[in-house]
Image 1 (spheres, rainbow, N blue to C red):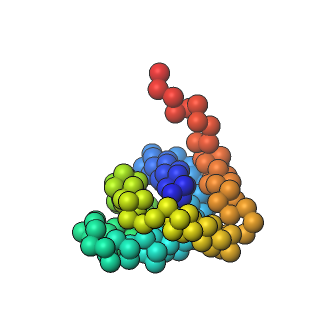
Image 2: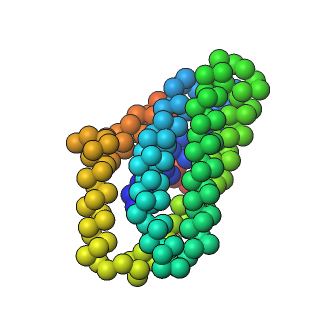
Image 3: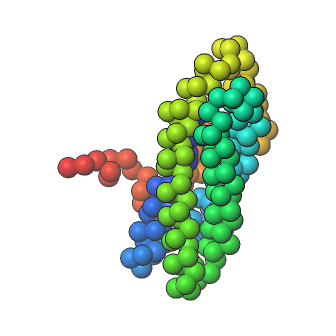
Length: 184
């Protein structure tokens, strides 16, 4: 699921926002709200909705990984609440309200803390198990269905357009160039 790559890049944006908010360094006013908007539209309303409608029920029906699926569903709901908080806090936090800034930092940290293990479990346990749960033909058909939905929601550029949007946020924060993250 390539959507997790977008999520990881958003988590990097959130980490940079936290760093700047805590250090009192300038943060472009729309960086966090734009990133949270991508989380809302692309991760929650598209990616997670597909998981909830098409993948999780298959596991539940088969009685496979039901405990994991229950936690993942609960985390989706919690993530939606956190994203709502982030979106509602960005205006006051960017206007200099210290309490809002602290709350925003706390909400960003909780989102990161939940979604790093969340996506890791999906990538290493849930998605590999899906290959064993459904026939290859059905798996391919799901992929085609997901891609059609992606283009319905996000236009002709779909995923690539979302990646471009994330890259623009990264560039506004000076974290786009991959080489800067090379250990020395």
